[in-house]
Length: 357
Image (tube, rainbow, N blue to C red; front, top):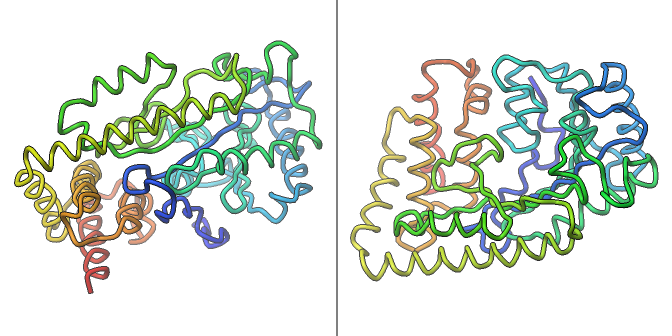
């Protein structure tokens, strides 16, 4: 089994609820897509090309001040449960982990990670730098990733065009190669039925929304990923500034929606949050989707001071540890075990009881 103790925080410091607006914004993520000059892009690359990319990137990473001493996980050599574990912690994409249907990771697929910055090697592009921060903190997340990007850029040649910027496998990522996103919880807008208006407004200003795990994932538990849709024609600072302004507006709309709920339906909101808390504390079987929806209700209650607890950090941990690979690893089962709903309910009860004691 993969040894996540090699990472100082298990790769999950972004869950510690220390950032701004952490009751609404769980995390901020920055990703930069890069390719090596003179090497075929992923779709045309041969196994030998991918192996060469891995060697060059890991050697360059070891020569940087920020990734030296980092941990390298070879996903192409891992069993599926370990790859799924990394995906559930938001350390790798579904594509890099080879989790779509019964595919295997590409040869040379790897993750190099140190502190809160990682490099996914041989994903859709030769490599993708990414960094996460707790709460709403676009500037700090970008600064950390940009510093690594600058160091690597001095060590390996990037595929770059004076007119089109950084060249990427998918044209929508060309230019800056930047994808900035925030994971945000919007139950107030959902309950007041304002969410569709807000989401439609996002698309009109060049942003997009996805589910808990980004592209291709469904929205569960009222958790949305908001991110920039284009990367060409604007600078990194402009893209981050634009996303930041819109996210601040969405946070304000969510806060207003919660105020409306407290003024117009206080008993209903309090009942919803306490029912969700009661079910989590006493249920004997829970599906993942049901758990996410119940956690959403409890999180709303905590944010509105309708519940005495649990803490936001505990709620964040439950988002990760109640997923199949984590439950299976903790209980020595397979990810397809039919008893996982029972294991999940037991884990949730124990964690909530330990915080209350």
